[in-house]
Image (cartoon, rainbow, N blue to C red; front, side):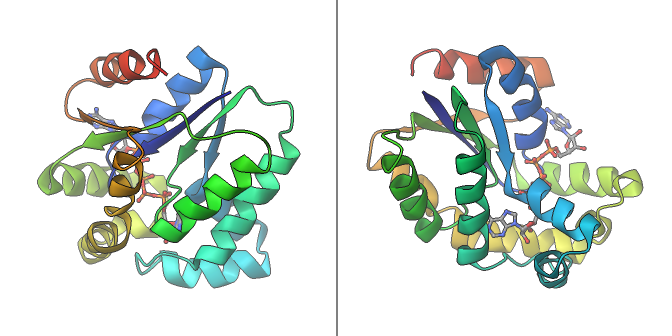
Length: 190
Ligand code: AP5
């Protein structure tokens, strides 16, 4: 099984690259952000609670997203691998993911981190906010809060995978195809 964690700050290009990677490697794309937005669209209780936090750029509680990923792993039993996009976002989530995969005799193959500076991130997200309908993209203060959350709670997750020798960082600035090529070079070594 090929299980890739695609990592990086908000706007780094995780979703964009995931779309290309799932085609090339025949993987299932698991984006906790997308799953949460689908809950919001459906108006579920979970979605309503999550929306209050997401609109402020704050992470939703670990147990909520761990439960969502657990359900998705169970409902994709025949998958040949997964891309985890936007998850794990805390060390507790990374530990839980390892346990979930272990119970299926699987493991994370590696993490690829996209490196993009804050100025470029803000530019990309504000630009997308104009027509994406994502409330968390429309406001520069919320974008900055998402980056602060990333630096304080999510960035330490990289060390979790460095300690296991499963971490590679690549330059996330360039054309989508250039970056895709760099990611594939890493994934082909898994
Ligand atoms: P989530 O949906 O995961 O958003 P995010 O991490 O903030 O990431 P984005 O989707 O905004 O960016 P991306 O890296 O995927 O970049 P993209 O390809 O879209 O999370 C949203 C919220 O949900 C969180 O704030 C939190 O509240 C909650 N949440 C989600 N997961 C959670 C978890 N595990 N735990 C707790 N809470 C959680 O690209 C961005 C833009 O840049 C696009 O317009 C794109 O076209 C453009 N672009 C992409 N590549 C390039 C390039 N190479 N050059 C120029 N532009 C580019």
